[in-house]
Structure formats: C-alpha cells, structure tokens
Image (cartoon, rainbow, N blue to C red; front, side):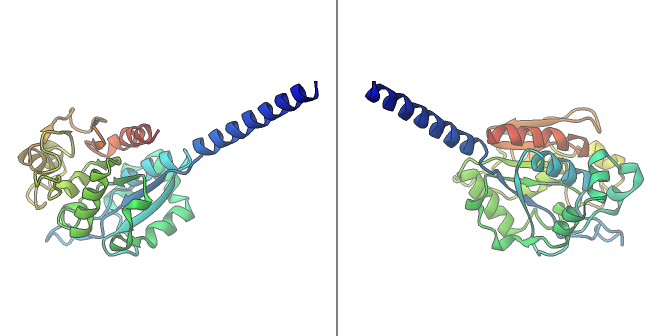
Length: 254
C-alpha cells in the first residue's frame, strides 16, 4: 500500500510538472522587430513624410495585447518621423487615438534603436509599417535588405503593409532571384497612389515594382482591407489592411 501511495503521488507530481512546463512553453514571449523609416522628406515638394501612424499603431497594439515583446528600429535610430497626414483627425482610428494617449509607445518611437545594431537571431518575426518614407530609404538600405534576407533564410515571418513592401525592392533569395518572384503579394496600388496625387512624386510605384520583380500581385478595390500570405511572407494593401497583416503574423507565430 505504501508503494502504491508513493507511485500515485509521484505520478501526480510529474503530471503537475509537465503541466507547468507546458504552460511556460505557451507563455513564451514572442519577440517581434518593427522596422520604421528614418526618411521625412516627400521628394522635392518641401512637405514632410515618414511612417503612417495607423500602420504602426494597429499591429503594435494587436501584438502587444497578445503578449508580444516589441523592439522598434530605424536606419538612423532615434526619433522615427511621423507622416503629418497620418496624424490628422481625418486619419484617426481607435489605434491612433490609443497611441496619442500612450506615453510609453511615443517614447519608443522617439528613441528607436539603430537597425545596424539589431541581431535578427533574437527575434521571431519582423514587421514593416508603411508610409511613404520607406520608398526613399528602406528600399535601398543595405542593412534592412540583409536583415530581411536573414529572416527569410530562417523561414521566420516577414510582414509588410501599404508602402512598406518597398523594402522588398532589392531583397534576394539565396539563388539571387528577387524574394517576391513567384510569390503572392500585395501593396499600395497605383490607383491609390494616383488618388493621393503622389504618382509623379514617389521614386517608384509599389504595385509596379512588385510586378516587375516577378511577384504575383493582387488587390481589392481602392482603400479596401486586403492582406495576403505566401509561406512566411505577409503583405497588406493599404492602411486599412494593417489589422489583417497583424492577425496573419500572429497566426504564423502560433
């Protein structure tokens, strides 16, 4: 009887130990890197640009609220420029209103890490918010290009929304072909760019670049929420698509 009691107690302890280990595994932090633009000039217009607040804030809070640990980096480090148009009342959403009141998040935006100092091995996924800024800097930034290629080799989720797929312009697969070649992708449409009257200002059009690089580009009507995933590559069409991109990113990390 004593032996039987001992075995029962031991089994219960092992079950509890395994359950605790399982719970710890479930609660393991998701470490996600957000890469924002450092570019704040809208071509030669004299106007400012940067990242689009909704495209940062919506995924940021979606992921943060699910327990993710988020690090924010830019090519230059320090304050990431906010596109003034995205901070206007017309562009307000629940996520941007939350950001406007969030001193912690604003401090992170004001003190981003230098992208060159980031070790991709420390992160489970990378996310690029849009805004027009990436068309000028992230599209040609060697550090960003190498970082995306590193994540791609490790088959970790790589996500982009709106103008952020511009960062894929010069990213290659191991065989030297464009990363997007043969992959289903989306991004800010030519007609959406025309609607905001910046077609002649931007250095290139996201839709055209993705298509020219061999991407299987698709879209919905202008301003409709649309995101698509091909393997570990996730892309969203416009600001309204940021939540869909975040949801697909979360699902990929499960």
